[in-house]
Image (cartoon, protein in one colour):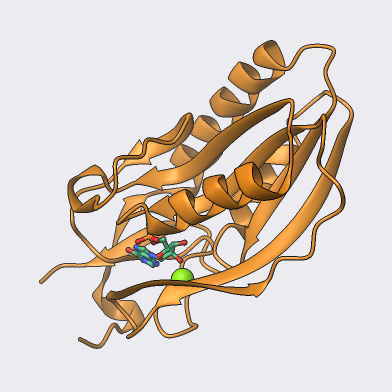
Length: 177
Ligand code: IMP
Ligand code: MG
């Protein structure tokens, strides 16, 4: 499959994304009221979502960035998660909020949740993903917060890439097959 910009159809517009992100932030502001949070952005895909989301969060907050990769080819997952860079401060006793772009097979989410459990004794752990591809799930995992459900399409834009491209789009698009 090759994806050209002119083939892209809008799945979620910039307005839809920003409205939903504000709603998610509101839910989080209520849940974490008075608590401090460590928000962990999973690079590279979650970068746009994470920066827009945290701008609406009102609790004392620190940001961390980790880099993982799981995609073997441009559009299909390898089924193996690689921790490219996962250096983190001590998260014992912290409220940890993991921010992802999309949960597909769920392997990345499971890897991260297990990683937190093995390495830290956190106060709370929440997993937030902008998109949730529920029907392609291979492990039994659900994000605590998600923006939109998507069916089995390969989507790009707003952080999500095809072969490294299209992360800079302000909307999320897909190629009609
Ligand atoms: P999982 O481990 O299979 O849940 O995959 C998670 C990762 O796969 C995400 O962090 C994305 O980087 C990538 N991914 C899954 N589906 C898509 C897609 O439709 N477009 C772009 N990247 C995707
Ligand atoms: Mg990716």
